[in-house]
Length: 152
Image (cartoon, rainbow, N blue to C red; front, side):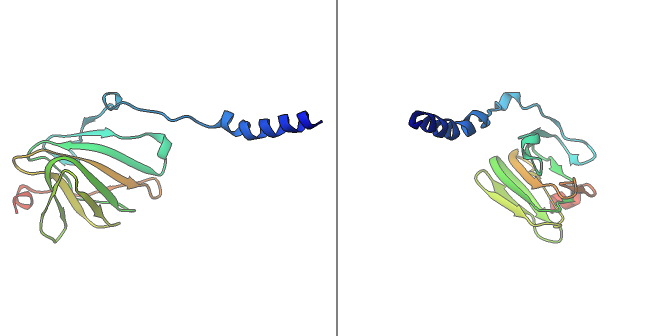
C-alpha cells in the first residue's frame, strides 16, 4: 500500500511536466520580412515580424530604415515601445521637435500620440517596434511625413 501511495505521488508530481510545452527558437535568418508598404513608409524600410501567434495580444516587428526612410504619421491605441538595436535615427511627436534615437535607446510613445520614426538623412537605424492590439488593431496610419517635415 505504501508503494502504491508513493507511486501515485510520484506520478502526480511528474504528470504536469509531461504536458508542459517546450521552448522554441526561431532563428533570425528564418524570420521572413518584406519591404514596407509605400502607403505607410517613405524610402526603403525592411519589416520582419519578431513573433507570431504565440503572443496574440502583442505584435512586434524588427524594422530597418535605410538613410532617408521613415514611417508615415501614426498612432497606437495601447502605445508603442521602440528598442533601437543598431544605427541612429529620428523620431518625432506631432507638434514637437524631432529627437535623435540611437542603438541602446528605448523610446516609449503613449497611446494615441501621433508620431513617426525612421533613419536620418545619412544613417540607417534598426529597432524593434512593440505594440499591443486593442480591438484587433495595433496601429492607425495617417498621412506620410512630408520632405519638409522630415527636414525640420
